[in-house]
Image (cartoon, rainbow, N blue to C red; front, top):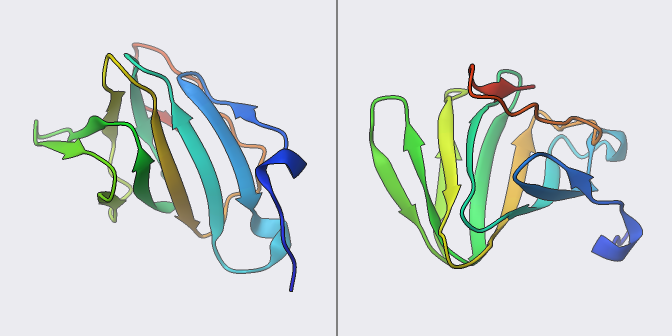
Length: 124
């Protein structure tokens, strides 16, 4: 058994916010957990080619859009699930940051970073 607080892990800047990787591959749990902050007014083109991801909204609001143009509103208590390595647009509302609890399977190592550009979806 172990505990870990956000104060014990360094925030990783990922382009439109920060990620505190609380449980990673090195913990040998079979999944990873990160607290993800998405800054107000940002849009990110993201894709996880090697991981499935579920994100539970803790606070704030925004939306996620798939490549078919389906937009899903995200508010506290909502989970969105990327079950097919889905390329997607993640947006925080203009007036507030969005805080997510992100779960990855298989687990991330903890040092991955997105490279955001208008040319395509950032992936790892």
